Length: 207
Image 1 (cartoon, rainbow, N blue to C red):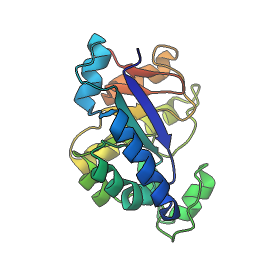
Image 2 (cartoon, rainbow, N blue to C red):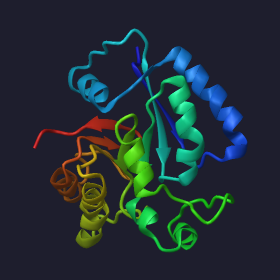
Image 3 (cartoon, one colour):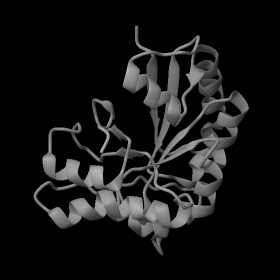
């Protein structure tokens, strides 16, 4: 039996709010919310303590409409959202230009494209803030400087603005932990507990 289901989202435009409301209602009826501690316990022991399987609604790229549209619906249905933010997107002076240059889909809902740090602080706790690299760039394993910036640099941004490290890191087209020692070293140094990759969700070894 599978005890976890991961459901991925990116942009959550307002005109689809009714669709998300119905989806979240259906997920909440069949699945239990999953916190970071729930995930750590399950991945460490293989034991799931809740009466229903868990669901992780994961929102990639840190879009502003994830906060405006998805967040209140998650709250309505008692789900814990996992928000994979991109600090460089938040900090970009021109978020539309940044999105166009970094393989991020543009929203047509106004100039503000990314979550603000204030919104991330509000999400942090009732939901989960996590890292999706610093600039939404594919990490080249033969470029140590970029590896450091995208993996550890992102964590440094979260610490500076949220006051603590985030626990989860999501690759952009990346492989599993244990496949690339150079990248693994930066993941370890950044102190992440979880790695989300294309085909795996891993609890990282204790450092």
